[in-house]
Structures are given as C-alpha cells and as structure tokens.
Image 1 (cartoon, rainbow, N blue to C red):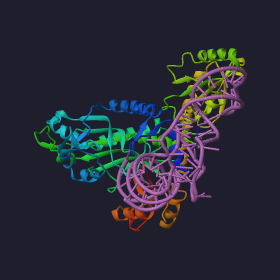
Image 2 (cartoon, rainbow, N blue to C red):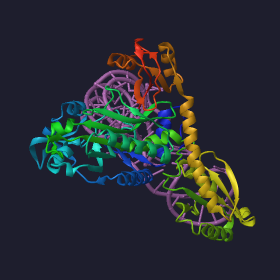
Image 3 (cartoon, chains in turn blue, brown):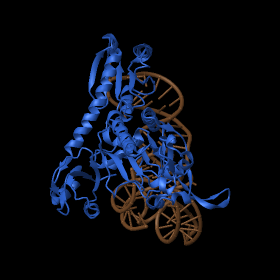
Image 4 (cartoon, chains in turn brown, purple):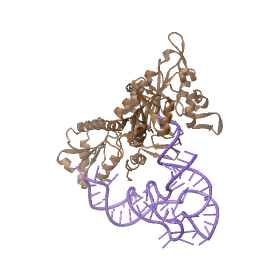
Length: 473
RNA sequence: CGGGGCGUAGCGCAGCCCGGUUAGCGCGCCUGCUUUGGGAGCAGGAGGUCCCGAGUUCGAAUCUCGGCGCCCCGACCA
C-alpha cells in the first residue's frame, strides 16, 4: 500500500491520499466528478440518517422534485439566475431532437419547487409547508476537489414556506446544522450570517456555520437562507390570510452536502490517514485476533467470537480474522480507514483474561479485563468523540486572532493563517479590497458578536463589533 | 481561462536527451511451503493497444507535428 503524504509536506496531496487510501472516493472518468466508494458512502448514509431524523423531528417531510428545470423558471428570479447561470449544465437535445426550451440540470431547486408551491398554497391553512429533498445537483465548477467541490454532488435541500416571517425557520435549521456539526462531526463551528457580498443569490439573508480546517482555512459547512418573499413574488405564490387578504408567501431554503465528508477528513485526520468521530464511523470497533499456528488460530478466532457476544446492539464492530494478512498489516489498514477503536486479542491476553484497546485518535493502548469490556468500549467511544471535538476546538482557538492593524493582518493571514476577528465598517468597498489584497474573505458576522467600538481595519471608519475573516475553501 | 506537472502492467515509477535484443523495477495479484503481538520470507507464475493520430526512418516508448485526458497552483463557487 502506498504511503500518505505528510500534512506538513503537501496538505492538498495529503487530503487526496487520505481519501484514496481509505477508499472513500475515486476520480471518475468524467472531469470534475467522483465516485463515492462504499467506505465513503457509508459515512454519507450515517450523516443522512442523523440529519433526516432531526428534520423530521422539527416537522419536515421528504419529497422529490425533477432533475431538470425549464430555462424560463431559472430566469424568473433575477438575482438567482445571475448567480447560478454561469455554472449550470444545460440540456439542449433530447430524443434526438433539439428541445424547444432548454432544460437546466438543477444547481439547486428553488425555482422548480416554487413553481409547484404556487399550486399547493392558497390559504394560510396550507402553511407551513416544510419540505426537504435528498438529491444530486450539478454546478459546473472551474476547479474541483474530492468532496469539497465536485461538478455533481449529493446534498439535502430544504425548501419551506413558514406560516409567517421566515426568520425563525431559517435560524432553527442553522441551529440543527450547528448541533450536528459539533455533536456528531465533533467539528466546532462559528454560526453567524453572511455579508451582502457572500449571501445566496436571491436571499434576503444567509446564515452559515464556518469551520476551520487543519490548514487553517475556513470551510462553509452549511447554509440556511431567509428568502423573504423574493421567490414567492417571482413565482406569484400568494395565500389568503385569516383576514381574507392576499399575501406573498415567506420562504427559506437550506442545505448541507457531501462536502461535510471533506470537512470531517480535514478536521480530524492525521498523517496515518482517516480519523472518524465514533458517532459517524460506519465501523466503530475492529477486533483483531492474533495467533501462532493453526491450533492457536482456531482458539483465538473462537475467543474473539465469544468476546464480542452481545455487542451488536451497542456498537458496530467487525472481527478481522483474515488469515492472509498479519496483525501488523491489519493494524495499519484499519488505522488508514479511521476506525475509532481496535481491540487486540492474542494468546497472552487469553491467559490473563484481558484484551488491549487501541484508540485511533491518540494511539494509546489500554489493557482491560474481558469482563465489562463492552462498557469500557462504550466509555472510550464517548471519550474519543469528546476529545476529538476538544482537540479541534483548541486548534481553532489557537489560530484565531484579534487584529486591529492591517499590516499585521496581511502578515498573519499568510503565516500562520487562521480566523481573524477584525473590525469592519460594513461597506462593500472595504470587503472587496480585503479580498483583492489578501485573498481573505469575511466568513461571517457571528451571532455571539460582542458590541465593541472600533475602527474598520481597512478604512478606519467606525465599527461596532468584530467579524470573522479568513481564507476559505 | 492563465501557469506548472504528468500520461509506460491494478498502483507507484525507471527507460526517452543520444532511435536498434524478448520494454524493466518496486508494491499488489495467483500457486505452494514456512510465517502471524506494528505493513512477513522463500520459490514459481500471470499480467502491456508504452494516452490517441499522423509523420520521419530499414526500424519509434524514444525524434517531429497535431489532438485528447488527468493532477497541482491562481481567477468563480456548497
């Protein structure tokens, strides 16, 4: 098996190597596209299961809308089409004939969904309409990267018409994303809202969770938009309220994608390969029996089966009793695949009625008695989940700087890089200039922003609180 | 779209400048034996449109021209 490039040597090669070695994905024969392999797809399925449960628990239902969107639909919302048209794939032929109207392959589904909502919503009694769909979308990106940005990707997109103002719904979803990122992915995030420049095409306001990767760049991990009445107006979706008045419907849309898998990789993995948080690891525990000779082999295989009796309900595990690989080889393989805990069981352990637990995140080996081993494993999984989060949070905090001097900012954004809390006057001019001169962008205006008087880092005009700036993916 | 790199066995590469045996090496794969507490050893074996096309030549992986594809770095973006 090939080795993984060290992070310090070449971060982006490291990232690709981790994915290849763990067999999460592979490059497809189509430029910019990837094949998500079973190991990677299993992570996506876990992500789906958890998020889907959270959406349903807040009253959302799943549905499915078409892949193709008539060109005229795309053009109904001005900002929206301007934002997305350049990156759309368009179908011009079908059945061997030129189509009368080109069909866009969905880059996102607002337009076709709101075209339907027009028919489905007439009265306030039809609200709220809370729909989510799990789907693939296509965006013709210039430069792609496995999981982080591919031409086609998988995601969920929620499209809701709340009873009134969409603000509460948009914020509620962002809170779901934050909870998911922190509690399941063990990835600390900064929730906040986007600047005018960075917000979604067609939105009134865009909310985001921003995470820091190990190369200290920011990654937008999820977004939720308050669309106001923009799409309702574009698609003429109105309802009659309790007073008999016609009103435009309020809207939200929100999504997370397979990009989360990229975020997971870049938050926790190390030079040995993938590191997964237990709550999202498709395989949480691997048991490797160790033997010498045929007679011992049978004994150890049997012992491994007995040891794991009753584990099924508590953890997902596997006994690796392949005879054609030696223990050391297996240790390495499961490490590159990110399995949180390895259990080693050899003749010496049998004699002492014990087993050895090895945690993936630290490499620490812990000898435990076979009695109560399952409890130990459960505790250890919790501990790994927690300490991955703590480690990531410490890393982020250690690379978050409060800066008031532009020259210092320019220097530090290059080395070491990170999140920068800066004062900003709120003008588009300064935001553009910041990006032009430093490649950094304003990632978000955090919810927990503290009121603080200061001067814009760029122009010196008054500012009343700090925003987060960073180089981003 | 600009800059850089690369296309030779499943993977990673050498060979190419300076054309000439049967195109080689490592890993992996198959068979057998010995092994098995951190990527095993020995023996035997299978596997190739040398990215594609044209040209030069007695002869092209190698030289010339044209094309295609991929990766990395920048401008657009979840």
